[in-house]
Amino acid sequence: MSCGADGDKDCCAADVVPGGTFDRSNDESYPATVSDFRLDRYEVTVGRFRAFVEALKGTQRDPPALKAGERPGVTDSGWRFDWTSSLSANTEELKAQLECDYYPTWTTEPGPNDHRPIHCVTWYEAFAFCVWDGGYMPTEAEWNYAAAGGAEQRMYPWGESRERGFAANECRGNGSSSGCNVAAFLPVGSFSPSGDARWGHADMLGNVSEWTLDCSDDYPMPCEDCSNQGCSGSTGHVVRGGNAIAPLYDTTFRNREYRTVRTQGVRCARKTQAE
Image 1 (cartoon, rainbow, N blue to C red):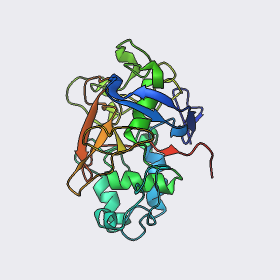
Image 2: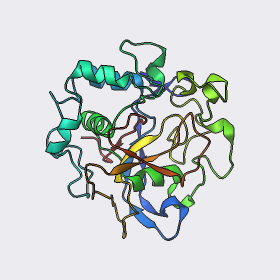
Image 3: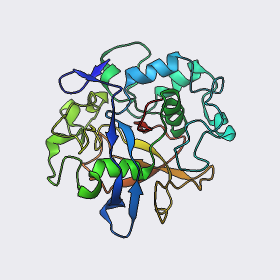
Image 4: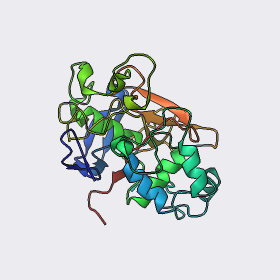
């Protein structure tokens, strides 16, 4: 399956992000150091997510293995037994729930939405997908580092200019600033390469907001390959990137959602060497 503005790029590509030190949210009060990692060039598409669903994964009948998806260097960040009950009971229930009330991009059969980002996935489903796909959920520091270009501390993934033609936001995808529909969510990479981040990652602002591994409390300090894992069942998780319905945010924007809310998408992180 091919993605990108010219339709000639691998939808599953994961580009290396060279590690370094930067300030989270461009605030020198929150320095962080991140090791080398790979990050999906594109948000997970409907087509990629359908392959996961059709493999009968991401439900209580076939959850990730215990501790699967652990982020290297982050203790206790893998799959936990008590998370399984928050997955759909079976594949048919999962398919029905992906038809959420908030601009669902999911379709049961292949079609024109296949190149759009999957929307309406819970944090648990996003985590399970990344495990199945050989990766892990990116930490907030990793996501922010890639979007800001590391030490370049970019205000927007593409640079410092607030260019509205570089991201899918404010329903421009369906040619309207009101009465949005699913067409607001554009095929991934529609603004590549002009809207790409420093290391080639597309749609890090706009399209769908993306789950991260971290809880939504204050930034953990100090931070060397850190992630806030002090989560209770009711704690929200950090989401990044804005979305196609919202105004154009910048790389400092962070939001929180409860894990079971269906208003997000995801891109996965990976070790620097494929295994």
